[in-house]
Each structure stands twice: as C-alpha cells, then as structure tokens.
Amino acid sequence: MISDILVATHNPDKLKELQELLNNLKVRLHFLDELPQFLPSEENGKTIYENAMQKALEAAKYSGLLTLADDTGLFIEELNGAPGILSARFAGNSCSYSDNRKKVLNLLQGVENRKAYFETVVALALPDGIVAVLGGKLEGEITTEELGDNGFGYDSIFAVGDKTYAEMDSEQKNKISHRALAMKAIIPILEKVIID
Image (cartoon, rainbow, N blue to C red; front, side):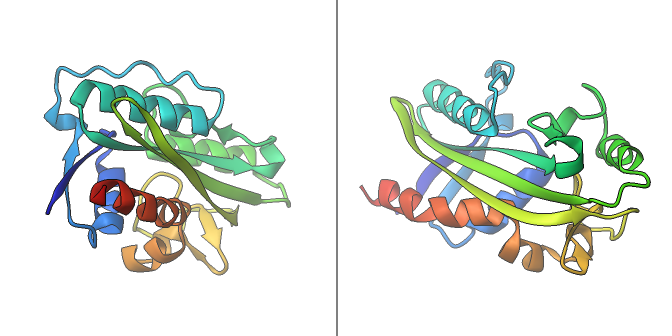
C-alpha cells in the first residue's frame, strides 16, 4: 500500500533532499506547489521547533494529509547563535543563498573561532494535531571561503572535518547531515503512522 504524505515546503532544493531521504518508504509525496490556494501564515515562532510545528499543522489541516515539515538553522558561536532562526533570510527578505553566505563570511573576517552547528527540526502532523517533533544536529565550522559546487544554502561554507557539504556528493551528505539525522529519527514514527 502506498501512503500519501504532504511535504510542506516550496524550496526545490529541500524537496530534492527530502525525496532522496524518503525514497525507501512506500509513500507518494505531495508538495505545496500542488496546493496553489494554500497560503501558509508567516513563520513567527521563536524557535525552529515552533516553526516546524506551525508549518506541519497548518498544511495538514488545509490538505487533510499526513504532513511533514522542517525548519533549519545555522548557529554560529562567534555570532551568538546567528543567523539561527533567520538563516534563510539572514541578508534580507529577498536575499539569495549567495547573499547569506557573503554576509556570514564578512562578519567572520579575521575571526579565529569558526565553530558552528546546523540543526533541523522535523514535525509530523495529522489534521487533528502534531504526531511527533524530532531534531538532528551536526557540529562543524565555517570556512574562510566558499568551497565546492554541490548543495545549496550555506553548504559551501559549512565544513565537517576536511570537507564542506558542497564538496560532498548527495549520498555522502545524506549520510551525515543535520537533515538526514532528523529524518532518520522520524522515519520509524512515520512508518508506524502509515501502517496504523
């Protein structure tokens, strides 16, 4: 039996990554692009946990489908946790991935402490409420320049060991990434909900 799951995002890069992480499940994925009338409210949570739950519950109520939503933040020690919850729009509301990376690199120019971590929170919701909320976190550091051509977002400046995410292929990244860790944690719950 194939189950239908709505992935509550418009971000094509995130969709591709989630499809790869869920490809072993017998599910049919639907995306917000299939619901043009659905206008999610502005993300106004104080944490990535609150935002993930808000996105999942709103989309589940609207669609009537089991819904998966995530929120991710890059937290840089020297910047007191910034960009954090504002990671997607760190350089402004209509900024590009490149704008965000450049802002981080400029703020860290000449700074020795480059410790950072990525955290993703995944929320699973049915129309009548939240089923589960789990996170994945990976520590690394910010490079002094962009390295690699793969990935998206901050991937070319976030290094784990001797490689940035952007220097890894998708298979390597999906074994260790913050999003992969969060998805691995939620998949057993997802499978249980699908079977029940």
